[in-house]
Length: 344
Image (cartoon, rainbow, N blue to C red; front, top):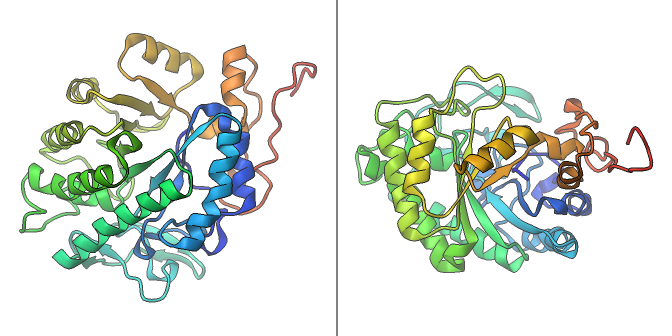
């Protein structure tokens, strides 16, 4: 099950409702949670959870217990949103930070309505070290909360990807310039987390050629991701999660890029984005990815794995109006398949 923001954590604290939601979907085998901030500076959206303090960590424990009770595994996705936020969404004393003071195009939802994304503050070396330490602390908290591992979110234009791209990183120190330098922050974080909790408990998500977060392709993109993936493979993280363009997107992830990722990474490779059960089976049989992650289908079909396995219809339709509503509706009220009922 792919990570999906659902905005059901008021005050950035996980709830009993979230435990029910994830427990319902334990049949996925591996659940990757919604984006969860490792830092007060990383709370880009309203009502997303954090895992940087004791209250949040303790509140995650019923969630992991609910998944484990049904035989599932669960990784928490560590999502620091970097410049994709607004000061109105951050706790007092926090600030909008990024590798460089470059404003992203677009707007952010706040309690006061939609606001333009602000110009972020460029991180100095002390702030870079602090952000790295926050990722490590959040990872240690995750294991304490019962998670089986963590996924670093280096996709969708958030902080980790902001370091990778020259469109958001125009630093002139060791964290900017060449592909190797732009990969340095991500690789240092990955290595530090691996040392803290074990490399077999660390995954990372990327979105090459993705457009989210005001990202666009750049000249040395292939070289950058080759350098990144080689570094990750040297560290020995357990999986690489590749976000593919969604259905209907006007761009693609070139087949040669997929092959490069497969060639350079010896661990588990996960593809996610726009799959049907049939296309997932085809990709798996061709041997490119090792696993396929599903997103929206899991929202409306909590028993998605069982439906696919038994060829039951995927007839629950996702209510997009409730994706981020904060209520039970459209969250834990989707029915599971009942073979004795011809409609559900």
